[in-house]
Length: 444
Image (cartoon, rainbow, N blue to C red; front, side, top):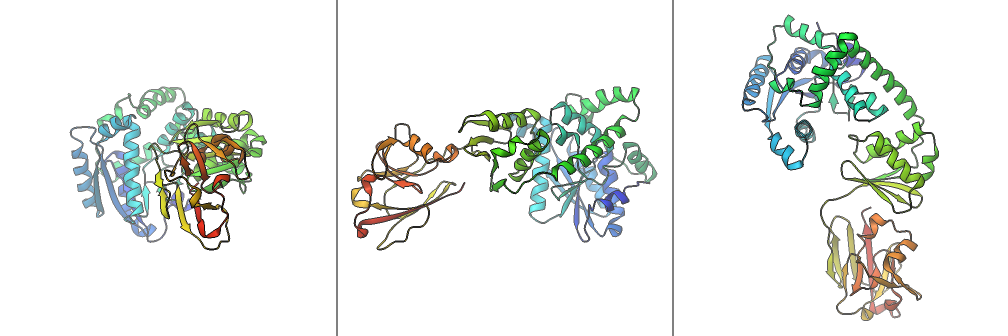
């Protein structure tokens, strides 16, 4: 008899009326979870559905899907089946099979959640999985964040009802209820990291310390309690997060390392980065903030960049695609890729708002166009004095990550306007009827 009802209730894994999708491979753990939840739908006031994802790693993988389908019918729950060519995905992305399979699974889960087909995903991770996960995180250098292991509920959508349940308890439950299951032969392939930890390292450790898995899982709980307490000490009000960008005041990096590391994690989480951040990345970010020169940057996992910008350490997601912008100087509204909107219009009178400029269109060369900055660009400041465009932008304290995406009005390498910033002295307005108003809003 599984004893996880208290764990489920104490951690608030389910809410009344929710539809719970059970990730079900057909193996022992997921079949036990599917049966347990289907048998207790009324008790928890939930509806259970089975979700099977065929990774197409084995030629006969379709048999697992057929097996789960029959069992779902037997248990009286709905069944959803998906197929993903994981080997192909891994090759295309240049990542390992394990990572590709995990990415495929979670993309499907998120799609089901986003469409409202299900409210949560139940995963069959148990005590042994927790112990293995903690060790793998430590081996990868993830620090305290990894040592706390998996949570009973994460992202408010993934729940782990068996996280306090041992593998032996699961096997006993299967035997008592005469539940069949099938095992994927790749689960014994020690070329995969988790299988190596499970079948080689942990097997050897348990010959000396039989209760090692439970001890590691209990250690993870203690780490979580301490980590949660320290996280509450972080003063996060000055951390500014917007869309895919987060800014941390440099003064925050003078606190104790325990607070600094967690501040960085909190900042990264706010822009959707929660995986693959290791101790080396934290140290690199701290070094950049404390000793790096202004404008220096480092590259992080998940296409993220950390850059020192004056009084802040900024972290943002970068885009792989090349972005170009080339528009004639005329009235209209122009989308600057995904970076912002440029509006040019005639005005008879004006009351300029922040970021708006006035240009005497008669003074602009006929070949002038809007584009992004280039090497060799020069700018005659309003009031006189010519500087390289790059130097002028630095003087204005425009962050380097933004400089490349601000439209400039150019004829050759001469810049007549920097959208949202300033106009050249050569196009200043003397008569209102000849003025164009330029308004640019940058998506930072």
